[in-house]
Structure formats: C-alpha cells, structure tokens
Image (cartoon, rainbow, N blue to C red; front, side):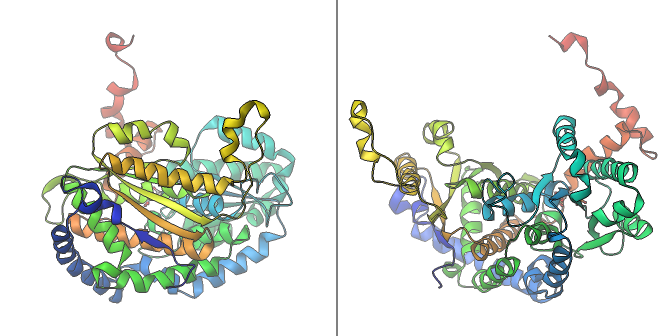
Length: 469
Ligand code: PA5
C-alpha cells in the first residue's frame, strides 16, 4: 500500500480492548466475515453488470474532460462561483472545498486558487439576502451553477428563480445565458427543460446516480475544478480504492469492515454512529457522511416489504471542539454509540507554541510543541478515555488531506453504505420519506395538483391556542 493511501484502524472495537460485553470477539469477527463476504461478492456482481452507476464514476473519462473544459472556460473570467443546490447536490461541494482549499480561501486573494466559492443549500432569506447585498456590483463577475438532478426541488428552484430574475433585470438576457450553468439530468426534468429552452450551458448528473452518491460526478467536481482542486487526483484515489473495496477477503476490505462493525453494533443496541474528525477541514465530510448514512440506511421496509424501521443515526462531532461539549455524554451516557475518528498525520501547516510568561510556568509543557502535536495527542487521549468506558472506536488515518486521499475516503464510504444496506436488507438508493415533506411544501406554496394535500395540512397551519404558552 502507498504511503498516501488512507488506512482504517479498528482494533479498538475488539473484545481484547473493550471487553466481551461491548467489544467484538474473534468468534464474532469470524461470523461477521462469513456474513459479509457473500455480500461483497453480490456488490461486485452488481458493479460488474452495470447496476451501480456511482461505482463507474471514477472510471468515466468523459466526466473530467467535460468538467475541466467548462471550468477552464470560466475560471479566469469570474471572481465568484455560486453553487445553488441542496442535499446531495451541495454537501460534497462544501466538503471538498473546506477540506482541500484553505480556511481563508474566500477572504485572502493570496490563498485563493480560483474564484471565491459560495454554496447555498438553504432558503434562509437573511443568509441569501445578506449575500445578495454583498454581491451587488460584483454580479457581473459571478457565475452561478444551479445543481438539481430532478430540477423540481423547491429550494433550489427558488434560489434559481431569484438569481435568474436578478440577472435578467440587472444585466439582460445575454449575461443571464453566459452566467448560469445548469447541472442536471441529461435528458429530462424541469431544469433540463429550462436549460434547453433558454440556451444555458449544462453539466450532467449521470443516469442512475443519486444525489448523495454524486460527488465524484459533475455535481461535485465542477466547483472543485474551478477552485483549483486537482480532480484527476480525486478520481485516481477512488480508482485505487476500488480494488480494496472489491476484495472478497473481508480483512483486506475497509468498506466491508466498516459495514460489518456498524451492522454488528446496531444489532447490539449501539444505534448511534459518531463521526469525529480531528481536523476542521474534514468536518464537512462528517456532514456529507451524515446525509449518506441517514438517507441511505433509514428505511421503513426491507427488501421483502416487511416493516422494519431500521437505520443507525449518524452524528457529527469535531475534535477537539466537541471534547468540551459532547464527550461527557459520550463517556458517561448510555453506551449506545460507536465512534469513527478521522485523524491526519501531516497537516499543511504546523505551528510551534510559544513560551509562557513567568506568571504561568505551568503552561511550559506546551512550549516547543506544535499545534498538530496537541491536536493529535488530544485525539489519542479522547480515544483512550472512551476505551476506559468500553466505547467502541475506529479511525480513518490520513497521511495528508489531499485530493487522492479524499477520493479514496469518498469511494470507501459510498461502498460501505452499499454494503451496510445489504446487511440490513434494505434499499440504500432511494429516499421515499423525503417526498412527503417536499409534496406538503408544494401544497403550502399553492402548486397545482396538490389541493387535496393542502386541505389536509390546514389544521397544522394555525397553532392551537390551547397548546400555545
Ligand atoms: O441524495 C439525494 O438524492 C438528495 O439529497 C438530493 O440530492 C436532494 O434532495 C436534492 O435533489 P435534486 O438534486 O433533485 O434537487
């Protein structure tokens, strides 16, 4: 394995470390191996027969070609890139940007490798309004990438219609056509229709790839490429990971181990799964993971149609910040969680800690050490403390936070999600429960065809005063 490959460390879930009541014994690992190996085989079969389009993304040569061509076209011509999207159409963009570009990217021209990037994944009028105020005379130098596979998502549609109106009113039709890029289904949907009718440049959400599995497609790669991230390295990392997650040797396959351990603990009543990066840059990957895990694995029915109401609850936490917020609960509260740390060996910066003043000699132990040393010591310390309370812990180790490693991480977690879905015997690729809320929104916003639902919602519109204090 190359030094730059990510590694999974899982000894701290074993019974040897946290005891037989909470740890996994050798015998149980053997059973998990027997249970998971056929499922790895099944997933490989599905991939080989073309049933898992997300697994083909890193091998598709057309995607980086078209993404890079369009990125090159706009990169030097704009000062700001604005992504409009939600859920799987936004979280990957945010995660890549915050992991791979510097913290002050948008504010410091010297740290910027491309235009500023803003990703709006909500319809908060204060947030968007403040942005539009700032945008004012910068509108001309701004490109908007509206991302929606279906094209009918109300939040993204609303953002788009606001921007469309603004561009048409302020700069006219030619500017509107030049400054909006639509990423959507290749052939169908509202956004595709608009793009075709209005002559907008387009990118594609590949067929059969759901939003939360789409970061390695045009959806996530375009903003990354525009902002100077090496997307070829991301894809190379994913391709390298493909061999590891296809291995039918359970102990060689990190996605299978993640899936099996999560499955085991779910059955044992540990139904919360905390992802805790010790890196601010990786924190938004915990957010990305949260959606991937929750939407994919939280299901009413199993594959035979029986009602199961299954699904582990993903939680995001940040080290060290949440040591001072959540760890009290994690150690002393119910032993119902498993922990996945993300740890970085070499940060892009390291900062030596200065000398303490005479009046605070007790801080002397810090001086001469570095910030990275402190951060990683705190990770080990927290894990050690959790282990004392028999809490199962795993770690994904990053040599460096770079595109190659993140390509591996993304692809590994997507496959782990597929495998966990198989172990739970559910379909991880749909999200039927999101629909009712979307439709109720249509009803409340007077969309034709939703009149009956609007009637049903009436009682919920006005609060019942008897219950209002
Ligand atoms: O993962 C998913 O499928 C969802 O989170 C979608 O990405 C989200 O609902 C946005 O949908 P769309 O891209 O159709 O606007």
